[in-house]
View 1: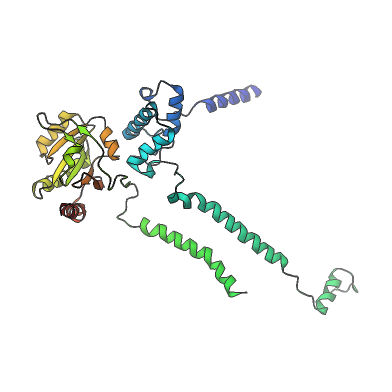
View 2: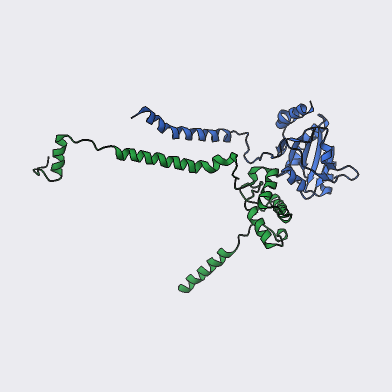
Length: 159
Length: 182
């Protein structure tokens, strides 16, 4: 049993160590491994406009392949990561980026949820404090006697 | 309870309703196709390109050809079904309406394109071949067919993704071409 468990652990570790395959074909890959790693990382952020929910790294579409090649050409030409992104955005618009950039147009997208969370949390906290601060209502004479009875301090007779 | 406090509780509910409406009303419009990406090049000059001719002996197609006239650029391929469907419309635009249509043959064996146009007719004033699709990428093309409206200064004024249909031609393309010709 322990041998089986170890085998499974070993297998899982090997699988975890395998890099994600993507749709990149050998003839596209760059000779320089550092550049190729940057290309893969960038490709994962670029939307394949044919399938639209996949990155060009994942997509098997023709356009995805063309864009992967263009991206690698820009890297070989010496462009930085941001310049490569800008090259594609200039042609296809912001939608080509899977991760929206931080711009005035996307402030609402990026800051909206945390701001709403803080506002909601504040409202919740204030509401809680208001409730805690409200004093307990005064008991009438009859209610005080009944309380004493129930607590067993009075004559002990049930009402 | 203070009336103001009551109203305050309406704020999140109202905000939610407004946001849902702002999303749903355009989203449920049947004319909208969310997979259509807007061109990033509207009102910008057409990208630089110089393409070899499809038909031997003719001139190819380059950016310089766009200046001084109002034209359409149509990206097409012989292997593209929707291109064949829109073809009669292009023939009418070129023939009856006298529109200058430039064709860019996208990733297509030239012989196949020549054979198709010989069979079904050639609406194009000039045709350039884009064998690698690189010029198409410079235009922001993500599928064929796509049609671009180019003004007299060589700027892109409109893009239509997918095959042209009669309604779009009547309601969008022809009026735009008229306006640009003024």
